[in-house]
Length: 411
Image 1 (tube, one colour):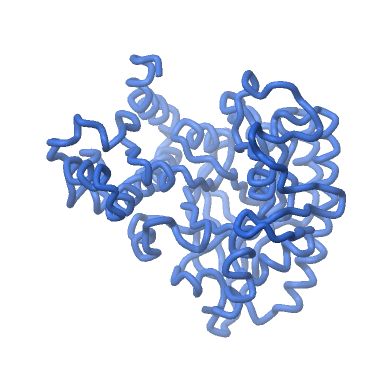
Image 2 (cartoon, helix red, strand yellow):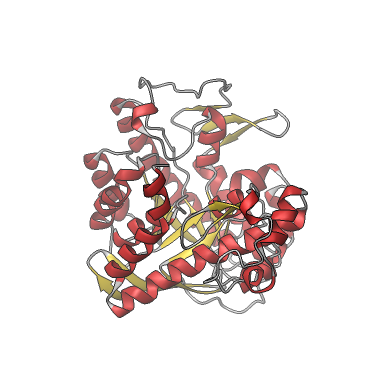
């Protein structure tokens, strides 16, 4: 909780630069973030199945919570009354909240962030995933949506998103944006980028007013969000436009094909100011993290490590595997012999196999501890490799080993 002292100003300092890839330090009122860094997602003010103290022990420098979910439950006013997100969840370090724009899109039309164009089908301006009901409607003022919890009706605008995020009190917050899908037409993407740019300016105005009004709270850094799907001209134009505005940093969001990630992030990084941090939203697979770092992203968040852990999927230097398979029933070895997490230094595959087959909650916790540590440590190693000048060899060695089994089996 804020102790009344003047908070340290938000700032970003670039360290080692290797092409677009770089190291750096983001300074926030609740401490520094050494970049590049993986930020675990605590959607509802908790990393699922893991205590905040455990997340800190895993080396996480910050956590990211979701404005949409906390707005619906328990309510941003309750988090505000608790002293802000960090105090509410007993997390002492830096915090992020996203704007809720992605959740409105994903829950509203049923599509995920990364799509394969080959399976996307026909494109249109009004898309909805098969078997889904439309729960969100976008107009130039904002987004009306139906709660996935109780069916109640709500509306987010740039101004209300800023109000919610100021109440949540995270160190880094994001401007409200429209996150499209790859199924939207080029014309719709153009209109969406223009809409997001207009919303960005409204967010800046609302943020300035709220910062003045809530001077008793630590300063919250506002990041603009660059959209534009997979169109180079739209991405570069959006980055130039937002890069000329007084944002503290930038998020890179939107639907994209996995194979194009490094190229698209590179377009954006080349246009954005070098003296402000770049956060790549919703990215967590190892090859995507390497691609993002190589293309100039500084921080990353993703639910992947905790989500797959609850289904028994274990991240390993030799590739992901399922702990519930019969091969692990009598495997009295760590989940990953090269991991230094609490799970790997205290428990065996056989024990986690038992917990998975018994559907014991402790299995979710132990698997999540390992998976989150695996990705946090991986990005820490990328940072060290950049400083040492051997990022490319480390990338080739790690990914060659991690995906060798998949290449061998063709899966």
